Length: 476
Image (tube, rainbow, N blue to C red):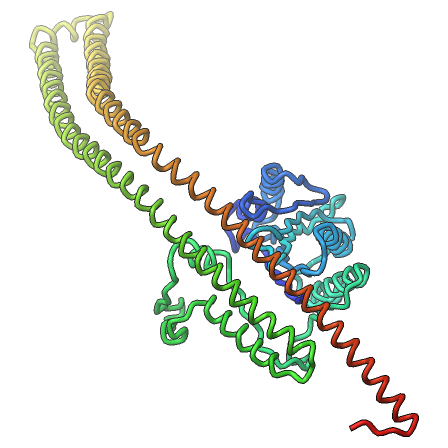
């Protein structure tokens, strides 16, 4: 059945690291999700879109909002083409064709039961560069700009209109309603959202464990006590089961029978998903064992290299200190010898009687020559030390680099085989999920047909009773 779910968030220069907006585009367009992509006023190719977004971000002010993110649940009743048209119509109406947007529709594999769209909006007029939608503005500022005061409510209302129009065009009676379940008068618990990171960890790694956390304000939150050993997925399943149990006791025949069917199908879904999760976790553990073995050996090589470099550096420092001290001592002796030679009585007398100043110039020249020679010798010592250092460190680094390459080459085949096995297994898992989705869809169609027959029979019986009452007969 069609459900209403729309989440609006943003990425800003002060709230996120540089390049986050571009990275988000790559994430929603990743091959693993098998998305359908569409965009306007910006590239559709993920890599080109990321580069475009990174350039655009550099032109923003320091505290600017870079993009707005809209995550929307798409009606399962619609076909792939109808969903694409719905997303395009909504995005074009929302933006007025004045700002750039990029959308990725996920409706394959694991998302077959949960088709949804990631819409990215770059709120800059394509001609003036000014903001158009102003989704981050306060209600007061939006009203001053001639916009609806509550941005989120405005977006939610637009989606409800477009989605229901698409359902009507496709000939479906189902509709979505942005109001809360309580406001709609529906006795059903709202389900909770399971983020992609939490879902990935539980499916591929291990069952998540709650932890006690402390907030920035020093408040301690006892999540283990709150969750009582349940994950978000467990809690979500509990809510679904509770809602189905309520629905099976409904007075409405259609709701009651649909809930029974959904409970049966959910049990089948859970059995398939449980087996696939166990297999995925086992594959992850095996791959991590291989990676851990490789990293362990690599760490040993790097530690050995670090220790060898440390010992070599100690020897080189000792050699450098000895040579530098020897050169410094020789330079000191030569400076003292020159000073003594120029300080003798004869040299002093020559300076006094030399009216031309040539003696002073000669002695000054000797002092400068000695100073220049000492500088060249110090520079040569430094250069010689660097050559000496390189002559010892380069072979050592090359040897360890060769060891690392050989180690990588030794582990690469096993890692590559495991990666191929993982991809193959995930493809098989997707096919199983798709087969289960087809079975569920067939069951839903069969139930709809049966319910339609029963309802038709009930209506016929009601007509017969009304006709008989009109003729004066009372049916017991």
